[in-house]
Image (tube, rainbow, N blue to C red; front, top):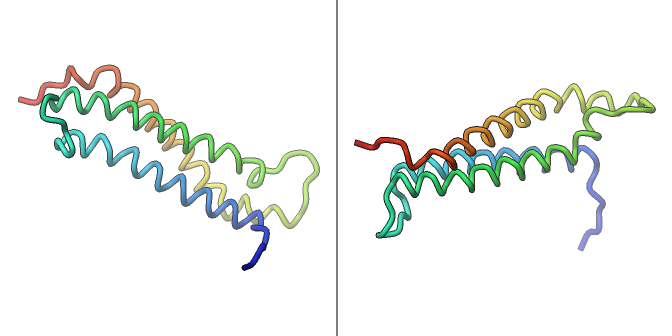
Length: 122
């Protein structure tokens, strides 16, 4: 069994992949709730959608937290080292895009969480 320590780039790639999957789930859960997937018999679609907003917010915030943990690996501050500049070029735009998507998902999830039951489904 190998006890290889993951490289900085390996940590960045793994974290970006996990964050992408979390955000995919953050979008999929309210979508499935709107369709009525796994809805209990005594719930309405509006209430089920509203409840999904809390899960959307949780997944978006978890994604943003994970992105925060690798921010320093991509955007170095302080002493600058030439070998770390490629990380910013290679992963900076994806990191920024995922961070903006996390923020947007958290904002939309908050609106769904607060007002999802007021959406008219007729």
